Image 1 (tube, helix red, strand yellow):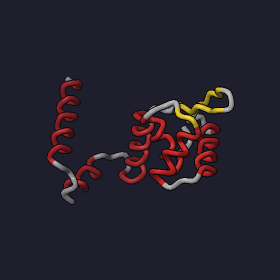
Image 2: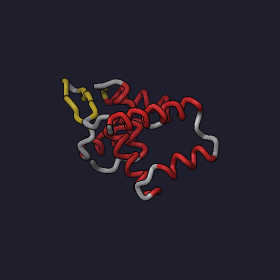
Image 3: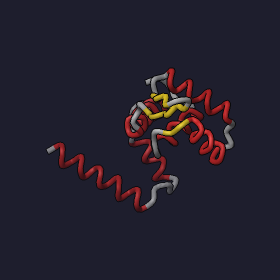
Image 4: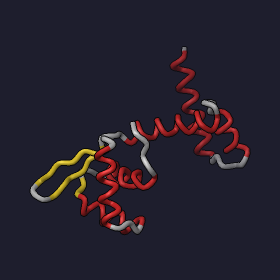
Length: 124
């Protein structure tokens, strides 16, 4: 998977919410949410198609875009890359840093505990 820029990610996020979308629908959504201009959105669409991150179907004069990358797949890849780069592949320092700065809510801790419990069950 090729690198996706922050601006390209905004386009993908719109398509993960609902797809397919036309270029005009994407322009409208991104103009409202991120003040992006039509030309910028169309450039980003072309880049994402070249990176094989989007597919399109032409219907008359209209292009309908769909993501070729699943949101969960992208998130996992980026998360692993982040942990590898900043923490030498170790997750504990990341979580410990959040815990130290009181950035973990009770809900976060409960979700982490549940994940750990599930992991322990699978290891038996």
